Image (cartoon, rainbow, N blue to C red; front, side):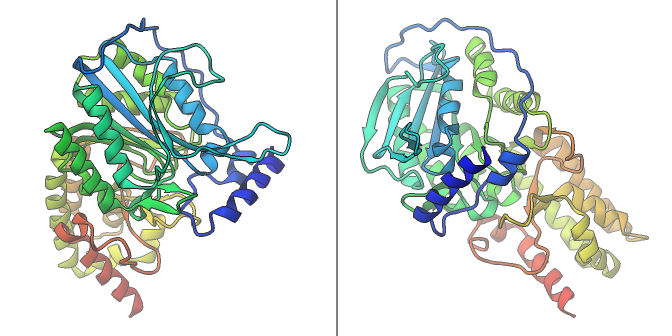
Length: 428
C-alpha cells in the first residue's frame, strides 16, 4: 500500500508543483490509517419520482473537488456512493457537482482525466462500487478551484430543485485562513474572501440565507473563516483538525434527514456533527456554529483583548511562547494554517495569571459565550480533549498578513492588532 501511494504522489507532484495544502499525508494514511467505527446503516427511504421544480423540504448540494490525490485514490467516488445509499427522496433532493482525477484501472495505474465536471442527481442504489446516479449537466471547462463554478452549480440546482431549506457542502482539501478547494490541474483554489462572496451570491439566488454550510475539508472551522461567511449562512459546520480521507459519513446523516425532512438548520448541523463523532474512533473534531452569534463573539473577543492589553501581567502571559506552545495546535507543522484552539488558549492565559481579575473575568466570559451561544454542537474524539470547536490564527514565530488582513474578521476584530503587539513583544 505504501509503495502504491508513493507512486501516485510522485506522479501527482509532477503536475501540481506549488499546489495547496494536503489534509492527510500519505505517510499517515499508510502507517496509521483512520479507522471508522461500525455504524448501522440508515433506515431505507423508498425513492419516488419527483418532478423537477416541485418544492421539497431540503436541497443538499455537495461540491466535490476530486481533482487531486483524493480523486485519484477513490475517496471522491466513495463519498458519492455513500450518498447513493440514501439518494434523493420526495422531501429531499441531493445534487453533487463531481470533478475528479482518477485511475484507468490498468496495472500501471495511469492517471485518468475527466474533462470538466458533471452534475449528478443522487439516486438510491445498492452498488457500492459504481456511481449510478444520472448526470443532469456536464461542463467541459469547469475549474473545481473556482468560486464562480461553485456559484454556477448552486444556481442550477436551486432553479431545478427548489426547496424550503438548503445545505451546501464543500468537499476537498482545506487550509484554514489560506483557502479551500485546491484543483491540482488548474492550480486554482478558493481564498476565504472569494468563498464568502460566492456564498453571498448563492444567498442572493435563494432570496434568503443558506441554512447550512459545511466544509468536508481540513482546518476550516476558524474564527476567520466563519466570520467571513456569517452574513450568508445560518449554521456553519467544519473541523478545526484534519478530516480523515473517508470524509463525512454521508449516508449516516442523509438517512435521518430523508426520514424526517421537516427538521431545521440547527438540527441538521447537530446531526452532521454527531454522526461524524460516531463514525470515527479517534483523532478528529467537528463543530456546528450559530452564525448569528458571531457578532457577539467578536464583541466579547475584543473586550477580552482590551483587558489583556491593558494589564501588563496578563499581556506577558498572553505573549509568552510557552503559553502559546501549550495551546492545542491544528495539526502538525507541515500545515500552513497556524491555527490553535481559542478556548484552550484563553484557559492557558488565565492559568498563568496570579492576579489580573479583569482579564481573567473577560476570558471566562468569552469562553462562556462561545460554549453557550456560538457553538451549537461539538464532537471531540479521543486524543483531542483540549479542543472545543473553534480555532483562531495564533502563529509561533511571526505574523503573516498574507490573505489575512483583507478578511472581515481582521477588519472588525482587534485580533490582528493583538498579534502584532505579541510579535513585537517577542522581539524585545
